[in-house]
Length: 115
Image (tube, rainbow, N blue to C red):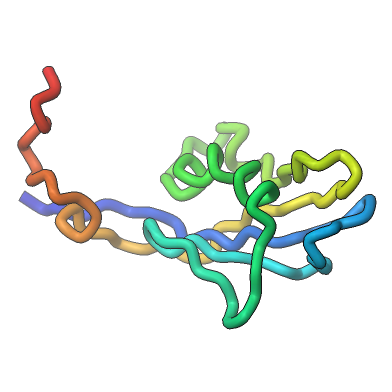
């Protein structure tokens, strides 16, 4: 059985700052999601609170979507700090073929005890 599936790599960037960002972000700061890993440019940081606002969307944005799904068009997320006003943009960058065995210790065909 083929153990591959497809995910999109993502880039999450600061698109706009409408207030005062106390985390020293500037427009263009970003992090990337490569497979199941978070990548930051060397010696850069990213606000934990802005990051957490994107996390619920990351798995869906990585997966193939139906053409009319709202996840294909809605790419912006707001930082939860209302005084910061940072707007983050989630962009798909490239498709990646992932092997199940590279991301899970549970063998295919084993439901892990689930019904």
